Image (tube, rainbow, N blue to C red; front, top):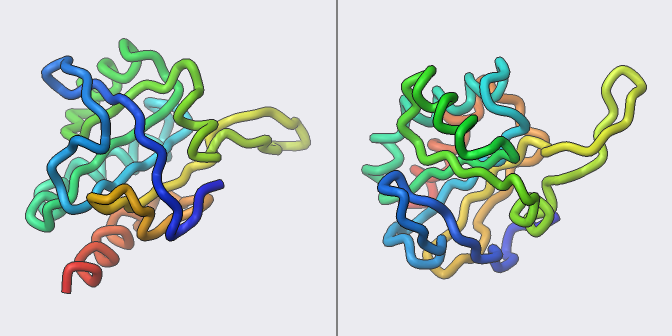
Length: 155
Protein backbone atom coordinates (compact mmCIF):
# COMPACT_ATOMS: atom_id res chain seq x y z
CA UNK A 1 0.00 0.00 0.00
CA UNK A 2 1.23 3.45 -0.86
CA UNK A 3 1.46 6.06 1.89
CA UNK A 4 1.68 9.82 2.27
CA UNK A 5 5.03 11.02 0.97
CA UNK A 6 5.37 8.23 -1.62
CA UNK A 7 5.57 8.96 -5.32
CA UNK A 8 2.25 8.07 -6.98
CA UNK A 9 2.76 5.65 -9.88
CA UNK A 10 1.94 7.19 -13.24
CA UNK A 11 -0.64 5.49 -15.44
CA UNK A 12 -2.73 6.16 -18.52
CA UNK A 13 -6.36 7.24 -18.25
CA UNK A 14 -9.04 7.79 -20.87
CA UNK A 15 -10.38 11.33 -20.80
CA UNK A 16 -14.02 12.17 -21.52
CA UNK A 17 -13.09 12.95 -25.15
CA UNK A 18 -11.73 9.35 -25.40
CA UNK A 19 -8.13 10.54 -25.69
CA UNK A 20 -5.59 8.77 -23.52
CA UNK A 21 -3.25 10.68 -21.24
CA UNK A 22 -1.00 10.01 -18.27
CA UNK A 23 -2.00 11.38 -14.89
CA UNK A 24 1.40 13.12 -14.78
CA UNK A 25 0.30 15.35 -17.66
CA UNK A 26 -2.91 16.58 -16.01
CA UNK A 27 -2.66 20.32 -15.50
CA UNK A 28 -4.00 20.60 -11.94
CA UNK A 29 -2.43 21.36 -8.58
CA UNK A 30 -4.03 18.31 -6.98
CA UNK A 31 -5.59 15.04 -8.04
CA UNK A 32 -8.16 13.11 -6.02
CA UNK A 33 -7.90 9.48 -7.04
CA UNK A 34 -10.66 7.35 -5.52
CA UNK A 35 -10.84 3.60 -5.90
CA UNK A 36 -14.24 1.99 -5.49
CA UNK A 37 -15.23 -1.69 -5.57
CA UNK A 38 -18.11 -1.90 -8.06
CA UNK A 39 -20.20 0.43 -10.17
CA UNK A 40 -23.89 0.82 -9.39
CA UNK A 41 -23.73 -0.56 -5.86
CA UNK A 42 -25.15 1.59 -3.05
CA UNK A 43 -21.87 2.75 -1.46
CA UNK A 44 -20.06 3.29 -4.76
CA UNK A 45 -23.03 5.18 -6.19
CA UNK A 46 -23.21 7.45 -3.13
CA UNK A 47 -19.48 8.18 -3.27
CA UNK A 48 -19.47 8.92 -7.02
CA UNK A 49 -22.60 11.10 -6.71
CA UNK A 50 -21.11 13.11 -3.85
CA UNK A 51 -17.84 13.63 -5.75
CA UNK A 52 -19.90 14.77 -8.76
CA UNK A 53 -21.94 17.20 -6.63
CA UNK A 54 -18.75 18.63 -5.10
CA UNK A 55 -16.80 18.67 -8.37
CA UNK A 56 -17.14 22.45 -8.89
CA UNK A 57 -15.84 23.10 -5.37
CA UNK A 58 -12.83 20.88 -6.08
CA UNK A 59 -12.24 22.60 -9.44
CA UNK A 60 -12.22 25.99 -7.70
CA UNK A 61 -9.29 24.59 -5.70
CA UNK A 62 -7.57 23.41 -8.92
CA UNK A 63 -8.24 19.79 -7.98
CA UNK A 64 -9.13 17.09 -10.51
CA UNK A 65 -11.11 13.95 -9.59
CA UNK A 66 -10.79 10.45 -11.06
CA UNK A 67 -12.63 7.34 -9.88
CA UNK A 68 -11.29 3.87 -10.67
CA UNK A 69 -12.80 0.40 -10.42
CA UNK A 70 -12.28 -2.90 -12.22
CA UNK A 71 -15.58 -2.52 -14.08
CA UNK A 72 -15.38 -2.55 -17.86
CA UNK A 73 -15.44 0.78 -19.73
CA UNK A 74 -19.00 0.00 -20.92
CA UNK A 75 -20.16 -0.64 -17.36
CA UNK A 76 -18.52 2.61 -16.27
CA UNK A 77 -20.33 4.53 -19.02
CA UNK A 78 -23.71 3.02 -18.07
CA UNK A 79 -23.07 3.82 -14.40
CA UNK A 80 -22.11 7.39 -15.26
CA UNK A 81 -25.16 7.91 -17.46
CA UNK A 82 -27.66 6.24 -15.11
CA UNK A 83 -26.66 8.47 -12.17
CA UNK A 84 -25.67 11.65 -14.09
CA UNK A 85 -22.12 11.43 -12.74
CA UNK A 86 -19.80 14.20 -13.86
CA UNK A 87 -16.50 12.97 -12.44
CA UNK A 88 -14.17 11.03 -14.69
CA UNK A 89 -14.43 7.27 -14.15
CA UNK A 90 -11.79 4.89 -15.46
CA UNK A 91 -11.65 1.14 -15.81
CA UNK A 92 -8.82 -0.96 -14.47
CA UNK A 93 -10.14 -4.23 -15.87
CA UNK A 94 -6.61 -5.66 -16.13
CA UNK A 95 -5.99 -4.80 -12.43
CA UNK A 96 -2.62 -3.10 -13.03
CA UNK A 97 -3.50 0.22 -11.36
CA UNK A 98 -5.24 -1.38 -8.36
CA UNK A 99 -2.27 -3.68 -7.78
CA UNK A 100 0.25 -0.85 -8.16
CA UNK A 101 -1.62 1.37 -5.70
CA UNK A 102 -2.08 -1.53 -3.27
CA UNK A 103 -5.87 -1.38 -3.10
CA UNK A 104 -6.48 -4.91 -4.47
CA UNK A 105 -6.57 -6.96 -1.28
CA UNK A 106 -8.06 -10.01 0.32
CA UNK A 107 -11.41 -9.21 1.89
CA UNK A 108 -13.61 -11.19 4.23
CA UNK A 109 -17.39 -10.95 4.09
CA UNK A 110 -19.59 -13.26 6.16
CA UNK A 111 -16.69 -15.69 6.54
CA UNK A 112 -16.05 -15.88 2.80
CA UNK A 113 -12.61 -14.69 1.65
CA UNK A 114 -12.11 -13.09 -1.76
CA UNK A 115 -10.01 -10.43 -3.45
CA UNK A 116 -11.42 -7.03 -4.26
CA UNK A 117 -10.80 -3.31 -4.20
CA UNK A 118 -10.59 -1.81 -0.74
CA UNK A 119 -12.27 1.60 -1.01
CA UNK A 120 -9.34 4.04 -0.83
CA UNK A 121 -8.76 7.68 -1.80
CA UNK A 122 -5.41 9.30 -2.60
CA UNK A 123 -4.65 13.02 -2.79
CA UNK A 124 -1.73 13.60 -5.15
CA UNK A 125 0.09 16.84 -5.99
CA UNK A 126 1.44 18.06 -9.33
CA UNK A 127 4.82 16.38 -8.66
CA UNK A 128 2.94 13.08 -8.09
CA UNK A 129 3.74 13.08 -4.37
CA UNK A 130 0.97 11.50 -2.31
CA UNK A 131 -0.26 14.14 0.13
CA UNK A 132 -2.83 12.03 1.98
CA UNK A 133 -4.42 8.57 1.90
CA UNK A 134 -7.88 7.65 3.18
CA UNK A 135 -8.05 3.87 3.77
CA UNK A 136 -11.12 1.66 4.16
CA UNK A 137 -13.34 4.61 3.30
CA UNK A 138 -16.95 4.75 4.41
CA UNK A 139 -18.82 6.58 1.59
CA UNK A 140 -21.15 8.72 3.70
CA UNK A 141 -19.41 12.03 4.45
CA UNK A 142 -16.14 11.01 2.82
CA UNK A 143 -16.24 13.59 0.03
CA UNK A 144 -16.77 16.43 2.52
CA UNK A 145 -13.78 15.15 4.51
CA UNK A 146 -11.58 15.16 1.39
CA UNK A 147 -12.83 18.61 0.34
CA UNK A 148 -12.12 20.01 3.82
CA UNK A 149 -8.60 18.59 3.67
CA UNK A 150 -8.01 20.14 0.22
CA UNK A 151 -9.28 23.52 1.47
CA UNK A 152 -6.91 23.36 4.47
CA UNK A 153 -4.07 22.31 2.17
CA UNK A 154 -4.60 25.41 0.03
CA UNK A 155 -4.60 27.86 2.96
